[in-house]
Image (cartoon, rainbow, N blue to C red; front, side, top):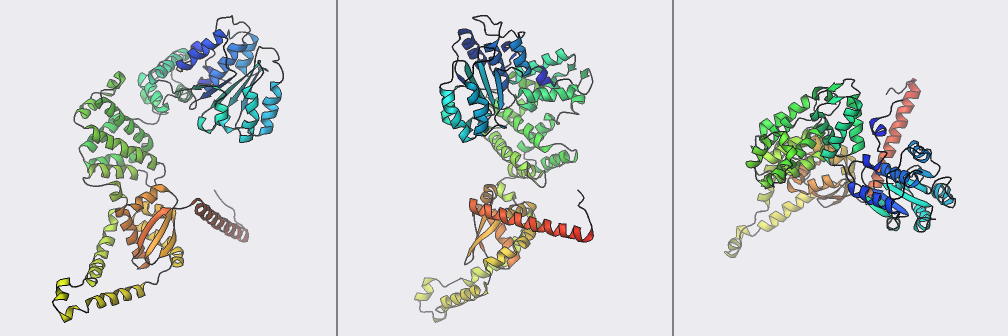
Length: 542
């Protein structure tokens, strides 16, 4: 079975390691001088060489042919070959995700520490994803890691350093791995393509590097998919079958429309992308990168390689101020997160266009659609009548002895009392008809209905309805005057009563209670479906 590229070209010598020079130089000097730490901690994101460097360090320390004052393993001796193949008895690799229990730590590590190496100079423990160990496992490791036997060495690898106890971190020599520079990774891919006997267009390699963001393993995995197309010469059109579409020309076009505040054309462009099947998440990521480049160019900190994107971006920057670019970047960073859960996939981008192009608007202004206008218009006469009911004569009239003006306060009080008598709504009824209100909200806008599905009424004090939201995103939206007013209009349409809305976040206990209620309803529904299937001899079809 052929190996994937990232396994086939896993560095076997320090000289083959790309990036991480700050780590490589330090380890090389420690190996040459013999001034080793008893425990190392390698932290950083996935796929950038933490486990690879751990194995390289193990090979160098246990290499049978490495001479004094050198750091490279020979990669030929029995010890090097066994470590390479994962068969070395003196190099013990442990996946902490599968061995979280303290009993596993005692069996695999603590008990093994006492025994001298089988053949090599050091007994080396490589613990991958060490942050997955339980608290009791960490406690069991503490003493062993602080004062291990001279023949033992620990190498801990983690992608989530913040989950490690400080007591563990303080016992290790720590190295922070970083994502590989784009130019370095691109040159590395070019060398591997040549080694494999292929020709790949430079634009394809640049796209791979851009998409994988400096993660070597991801880049090699994506390159492997492209080489699997079976063509010796791979052009951009061939790679487009594998790579998510990246069209900086369309991105640039959208930026031009946004800067010109051409709402109609910008919305049309976004909807054309949807019709063509473009991945909007990937498009938005490209858009964010494009605007980021514009900011760097504006600040005079652009990279030379960006010239290859075309001179159009430089022309756009000349006619745009930094504040406007920052506004664009902030808005699309927020919308990028919203895309993942949007029922209407292009809606977050459409809202971004409206927010950026329509003068004097904010995100809250477009949180609901224009369908709410009839609701607002219908409520105006009632508001005017209510205001008229509360009119009282000015002090001057009362002072003049105008007898007719005297009863006015009493009339206002009577009308207010009558109004309160008509308010017969209670919290139980609101809870019972909550789904009906969501349906009313759905007629106005799907975003409103979606928000209300994650909320529940908590209390009703006179005419003030307290609503708790599960997510802070929706809570903050409905705290804004415009969105809160729309919600109050929906409540009035549903319950025929004027209500004042007060929004807040649900407590953890309340969220748990709601989850239990939902699970219970789902269980009842499933039981009912199963009963129907049993009664009529049906089967569930997926």
